[in-house]
Length: 172
Image (cartoon, rainbow, N blue to C red; front, side, top):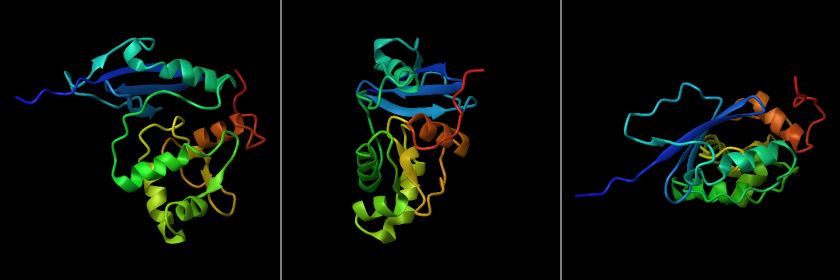
């Protein structure tokens, strides 16, 4: 009989952003941002407190990031995708805090300018937004492009990192 994998999840609100994080015993599997309606089947994952050890300090590190106390994440990841996707996600993690690159530049790093569309699709399927900083990828013309968590959040993240001069993170 095949043993089923045990999954865990927890939720937290940080800077008015709703996070739902799923983990395995290997690392972060998926982060949903502002997707309150995400449903899980009973028995698929065990709900934990945000500070539970199985949550791998992800909420603590996200709080530090939003408070300008963290520029890199060191939580373990359990990335599940094809070779191209995982290659893109690995390349995204090399983009330094406060910097951006274009989809075209990322495509060239992944084997050619003609891979821009595939790079965009890999970005859109990024399982751990913010931790894997796909928000740092913009259009060649300097416009933001897309973001699976919404352009408003992409703007806020780039502002937080000093890439935009918008005042989006002021406390209310």
